[in-house]
Image 1 (spheres, rainbow, N blue to C red):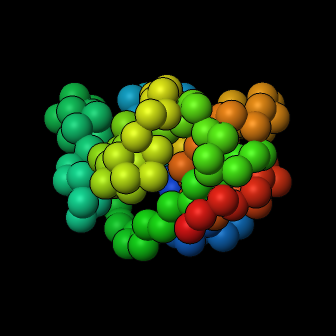
Image 2 (cartoon, rainbow, N blue to C red):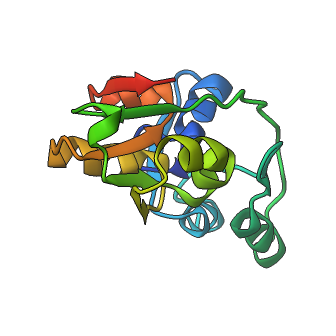
Length: 160
């Protein structure tokens, strides 16, 4: 089974695909809309996208796509969300923080308390946050990402 999901590797959606179908052939898409287009155009058998979370609420892009595309929800995976602050230096050194907007909403209190002066750079996914940090190797940069991305990009957890 070929499944489209938000990429690159290391997103919570990636983790949900593995939970849903362990042996799936995964096609990573740049946006939620790209996932829907992949399924609608027959390039993949189905797609896995986030629809809501208990802290930040519904995912607007997914709701918009459900209205635009004539696709049906086939199943549901409930995935406990746990974030990790990662980087190459120490927390006190952080000046820049890569974050997906949903992650910011989920971790806003932590960010305001622990990293109040950090510049926030929004990314298209948690996987993209991990990828940008891994490529930079800069001790003043960090990201908040899921454990799957920590492992895939070989990053150091500064705080769970």
